[in-house]
Image (cartoon, rainbow, N blue to C red; front, side):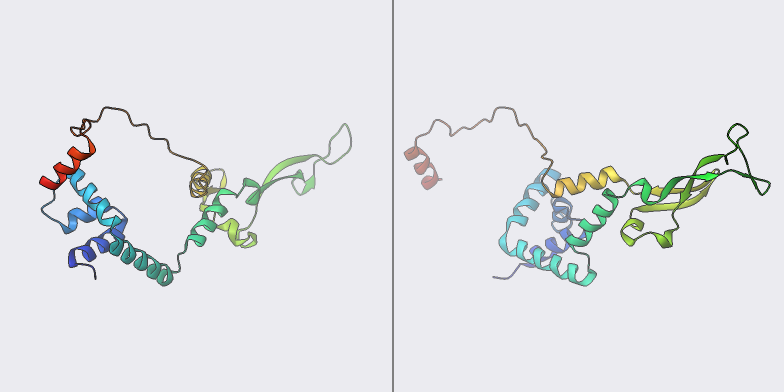
Amino acid sequence: MALTDKQKLFADEYLIDLNATRAYKAVYKNCKNDESAAAAGARMLRNVKVAEYIDQRMKDREKRTEVTQDKVLNELAAIAFAKGSDFAQVVEEPIILHGRYVMDPDTGKIRTEDVVRITPTDKLPEDKQKAISGIKQGKNGIEISTCDKVKALELLGRHLGMFKDKVEVTGNINNPYENLSTDELKKLIRDG
């Protein structure tokens, strides 16, 4: 059996932002309550035909856009594992003043200082370039901003199942059928 028009519309709406509540309310305009829409949207996603349609559409989009899970993970890994020394190095250089080396009067050796040397972007490997979110000329020189390393590590960790969100549910559930026997439950189902 094929999808109904409403199921197809729901799936297409869902693919916009992967929000089942919003998608359900967009298709079923008479549903105004978020809780009802969330429950109905979740049921819709459990429908085998709807799930297969969404899965196929996502695979088609992956081929069309060439955005794959592997590409996303590689981008996150490039951000997560980049380090400051990929972009700049602290090096010791001789001090030059008026075109001449500055000598230490006590030792007679050339005086040195630590300076920061930025790696030119055309010398950076592509995976290191991916971690850069911006470069600008600041008040004190060139400023390099990188993408959020901690967020990238968190997303990778979640993908790998390293972090589990714990949900604690407490409270009493009022079950009016709790004390009924199996026979009484069967009779209730049969008789309505």
